[in-house]
Length: 176
Length: 343
Image 1 (tube, one colour):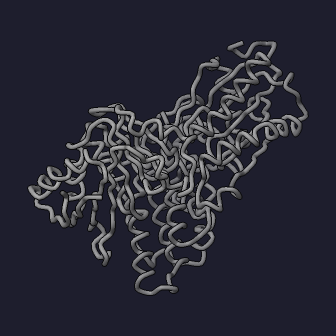
Image 2 (cartoon, helix red, strand yellow):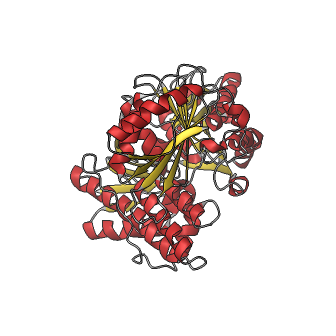
Image 3 (cartoon, chains in turn cyan, red):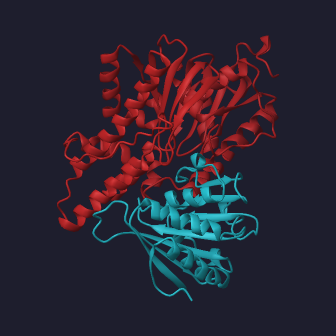
């Protein structure tokens, strides 16, 4: 597993991370988002989708309907939320697995840690972990950790962190 | 078959609803006589999981639908020969759950040669007030607040719904459920937060009310949710075991209700429409009803809300709006599909 942490002071820095990630995406990619309720998973995915050209106003919480699909961007995208399914869910009935790694859709999954190991096998997965700062003093402060075992994503971590550093963000950890 | 022919004029309508938690069926004599109204709640199953479990939901709809429809017919003392049209929720909702109801409706329609209409679940909530014995004139401002939807409409006619604004992120009911979960309360969160809030101080915490300049009728509950959760987590760290749950519940509920009522009143003022109708599962929340009553009264706005049973998910409202669709010849074919998001 390789990756790095980004320390964010406010929402505009979170949005910059989203924009930089969007610039590195390709059809077939799978991004898993992990973090407490309110950590900003939906917000970050909305900003990434906006970076791909999707109308922001269309991106709402998929908690209720589980899977939302988007056609309006650079390539078709899927925004899923496993919150209500819980950790032991059988995903075969919700139609998400068919989208993952199909080479056409870019798939964003909230509560991605609920996916089983067999569901993830062989997929180009980037894990995105969102944390509140320890003190919770500033509501907009976040730590975002990017992690991946996928070789294709590991190659992209370098350009990603370079771009984030150019944007003035504080990064810790090795990416290669 | 498309139009309500003279042969069908004395026939009843069978409503079927499977968009989320509930498997429900109802027999209605158009336009508003509810002969039966059966709801098989799945809340007991879901409460173990802290939310609706869609995969379980479709399985339970499958298990329930035959007896729920059968009971609706028996309660109404009618047989399928007395039914002229089947009205089914087509969306929005959980796709796997919706498919169960629509497929069942299609099967009855095909085998019995009955008209089939597809009903928009949110529009049916907006129409539910017509099942009450009230005099209501178009247009009115319709406000839907539930676990999956939060929206304001102008309802200009029985089939004419104009969306003014909706949630940009979380639905109000979703925010209730998630805050309840962080407070360690069981599912569903709405009723329990409402109950606890009566013992709490709504002014102890001032949680943010999102006012969106560019789209003032839209809602955003995500920032409120995050703020409340942050408050809870901080208190859990600083004074564990001593979190003022009732005060948090009351302050959170006040913020949600305040912003919903404010936007509905703004819609009324901006459009000059003097009637507001509230519906959806969260309309059962007493504070929300009271606040609407209070502020509408002060402004001379007429406020209506259907009885609780008609606010929560039910099939009578599906049958009622289905009857209007049937009358207008708006039937669907066997190739019709469900939709997950609103239109």
